[in-house]
Image (cartoon, rainbow, N blue to C red; front, side, top):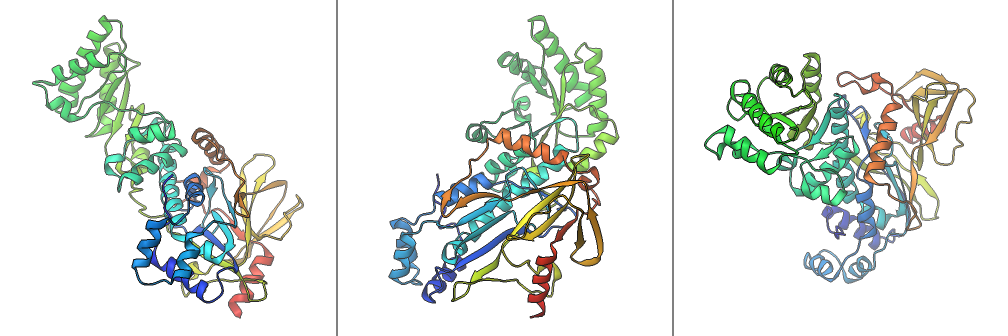
Length: 472
């Protein structure tokens, strides 16, 4: 495991130094990690929890770290000694990876001495923000087609870690494989790929390049046919090689098209392959594809069996940041009493929800579909199955009475008093859980454009507390 203890913003260290010097370091505090949302981020797919746990498990400041911090000439020796002895002692709750989470709902909460909880802000955010963003984009892409989606983004990712953990997030969201060999090794996921245009260009002719590749990989021969001319050269040359493979007892895997009018080219290529006796040859498409392009290709009847999607998946091209934040929700006062806190802003969306909270999700007993979510204070009893009225916290006259339901708490215990109490599922189990969560959503909430806004309401007690603090 890597030591990411110094992977933080300097102000986290200056703040905890201030808490320490002010005698506040051991006061319990509660922080919520959540995102605010946009039209394109009306929901998100939780990812990155396993790496967040690896970070927490491995927080330590070794001699080299302490020497570097000493050299900044900002901190005294007592503080550096406290850092050297750092061990997480608090509680963490989080939504399991693969869960659907909505704006303002805590994805993760930390309750710990503020010295510990504040230090972890930046690193938890960078881990959860990135993987959740990529998992969300990948989920929208995967669920915009019935064809398999392979993650092909490593060369376009913003660095090695973005490529590795972006591939992991894509697998959570339902990608069937990755081109990233290290990700395949690290996360035990399928790797896939064929050759590039440079392979074809390296030979005297496209046909010779295809023959050489087929000689090497006769049982998994998938040929890239758009180096020169897809329909007049690429597909006919591929068919010639497929005939030669068939004569040796092999069935070709298929072709890949990486450019051009994918709807037209794939329909024509499908016709040519079928007429040549290869109806089982797959057509893979790639080239700046996302959920919007997929919708168009579906509407045009494109004949595509699988996609290799890189840039627009691994960078979440249209939404470059999740915008997750980590905000103080409560802190002990000098008497040991936990005091709820909220941030006030002229921007209404930036006003936070105070206190230690839980997220409750209502499910319809007849359909199993989700109805609404309720953010409640931690000490409130769960709805018990009786008719329960919820209201829009921004327009309180909008109400809905939920009946014939069951409900579920979405946050689970990860750490208790500094001890890890959660067992991380496998990546395959996380991906399967995500598909269950998607299946519980009505289609109108999953629309790519102008989705219906899912109801996330506050309990009356939490709403009243928020209003009281706002007025005070």
